[in-house]
Length: 261
Length: 193
Image 1 (cartoon, rainbow over the protein chains, first blue to last red):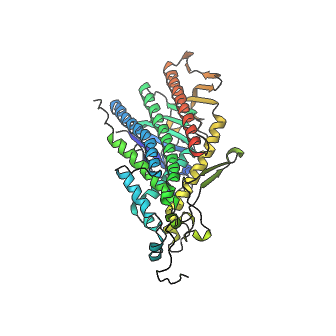
Image 2 (image 1 turned 180 degrees about the vertical axis):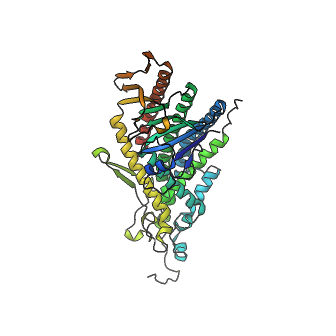
Image 3 (image 1 turned 30 degrees about the horizontal axis):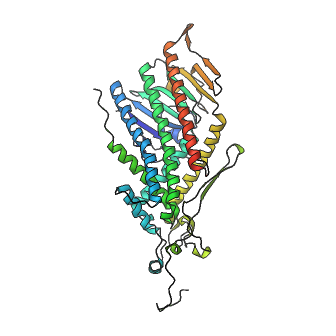
């Protein structure tokens, strides 16, 4: 099976495509982590590394890439849809009877400042209950890791490596402005080159989707701030979690790719 | 100190907004890419009436500094979120400025190595130990420079096709980047729609 990995913060990928590789040590910056975590020496010191390990089975490689493409399609459609639903929530429209809306509403209720009588009986700040919720704590940690990863992916050159049956076949550096520098292993075949270019495309689509997810979470959190008046920053993990859940919902609905064998 | 009441005093009409603490207000991030300061402000869409300083919750803005809980327990998760958010937005501001400065030219370079695993890429993503075989530079005004790969005086058709496919993909990616940068500026910079 084709594996899609990157080296960076977090324990998962919001788009359900990549597996993060944790740095092997606690580095001062990701550049150091990259050099420690990735066995190949052929990496620039300022890299955010994406690795795609293809198998020796061409049909399986194509099938796995098709499946990843569908997941990205769903994620790209889900992000603006989530933004519209969050906009509706912020405008006080009637709640959809759906779990993401229900969870967000329950979190907002926990973060609502208490009235004068309740405040007299319970002098705790209004956001304590929400901050103590394990699901919210997890969402806050994921939000923090996500923005850390987004920053690293913007800060460093994108490096995409493809291996076939464990052998490094291609290595592409993509600058932020879109310049490509690719080193190919001598003797690489046309089909392998085509698969590597698809791997590069998947990496860049992922980075773009992360950017859209980040901006959607920030702008939606600003819209939702009034619902989390006790501490408007609480709206950011809530909005991030909401978008993730919509992505997951759409990905569950998509058809599986047709097997090629 | 709270005064004792009998419960018979005349009551003011209850105003739910009066129970709201002062909101944290806009989140502002300042970046200074290439000597051009840029400020990104994100303001809540709803700002209840501000009271005086006395209406500030005891735990202050964004929940930091709550005297009733440990600093790490109360501010830890949100402090990390805020820190990483500010850093990500700062980096984004730099990258948008870079993009605006360098978008005029697209370069695609193709190298070949006999031992890719040991062809170290250096700072900036160059491959000093690999052979540069093909190169394309496309400027916005249409000027194009091309180096084609040859083998014993003949065009290396296979590598040239791979290079052309890479150029096509880089151009498609550049178009996608233009679109996404426009979206980001529209979404994050107030007044631009």
